[in-house]
Image 1: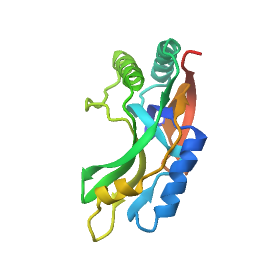
Image 2 (image 1 turned 180 degrees about the vertical axis):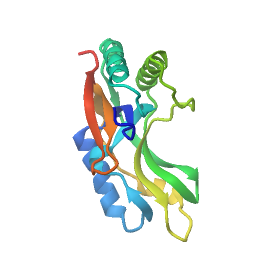
Image 3 (image 1 turned 45 degrees about the vertical axis):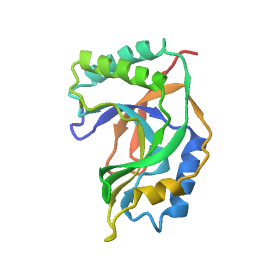
Length: 188
């Protein structure tokens, strides 16, 4: 396998919600002085970052295992509700949107995470913090004000139903850079 390719498992964001987030970003882009913005087609919620995968067989085995697990998990709704940052609050590394707390999402992530560990993947052990990355690296001289932007983020984005998760491959030289190589449906 291509050793430069990285893989991850994620919840895709529905088209309507991607568009609402993207429209908000476009409207505020002049004031949001970040070095880069995520392409709207790349919006997702990561469940497990796999990194480089040594063999196609290991990825196929994991996909089959996760497919079996998620086919028994009922579909559920998620609602995008606020924005936040990772890194220093005045010079954030990552600017992101969160979803309202969901026990269904937590359960899905836990099941996927354990399947990855059982298939021999080494995963980040940080607590799961579901988010949709919107932009990276604050570049302005003046400090970023999260409070101001949280007040500005007054979108009423409609909830969406999680019907499937995807195994994505990263293509660093393309935009959008994430390609869904497997679609794993939740229970009907």
